[in-house]
Length: 365
Image (tube, rainbow, N blue to C red; front, side, top):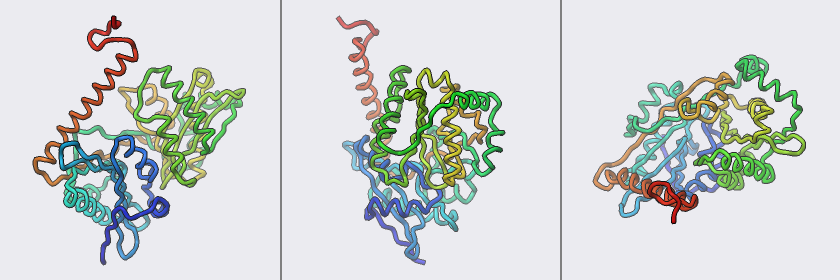
């Protein structure tokens, strides 16, 4: 049966229509997200479809970043390719990976990095072999995504009984406050969440690779059926806490959260998380991904997420393919230099913004 590969010949609406048939479709493989992230990294997006007998069996969005001074660059697919659909198997994955390697490694000369949407629990021998057979090597040096995944198939009352006792007590406390919950996808709620998120970031003094502005731009570009859901709690007209999630394929993914001091005191985030579980289950999602955990670096958030009693899952990590040669071997070096310079410029800006010099942290004279 003939295989046809189509590259960079699909519209945004067609991409959305075709991707919706895949169980592993996710926010990171939406047209709008890839477009926004490519713009932020000053790169571009390439999109590949693999068809068999006229039916799409796999697809991938690849963000491309050329390295200045080299003929090579990096082609990066996060939580792709899409290949899980009714009747699919690892042979379909192998064909999609072959097509990606042919297009971006052999034809264009890029170093290709793929971070598949596959957990260790789901990684059968056949799936791992598909990457090996297609020439992708596992990169054990990169950090792997770890998260809690809650199985949404049991009845809601069973899910509630499974909550950790302390977590359920906090939820009960929040429910007694009679907080108002607003949910939707529109710009007004997006703007309200962005204000809450930025206030929290300023108060805590942290930087994140997820910005409220990026979230708003991605949301604007998504078709209605793919838009992220915003949940906000209010008391007396004041926003207390916010929650952003994306439900695509068979999974709801928790993306961003924020709260202020009154919200924390009233346990508003517990109410929003439980409301998100209910909404995801009603929408037909079978899994709820709690958006990543770091038990060492962020133990408080880890404990909060652990209270929903999901499965502690680690994803299989990054795979890489290249055709070798000096140009490809220089890519990691150039990438390291680029990041170091970017961090140096950021540090210099932070010193100036704080009125400090770059030496010993003393006030500039």
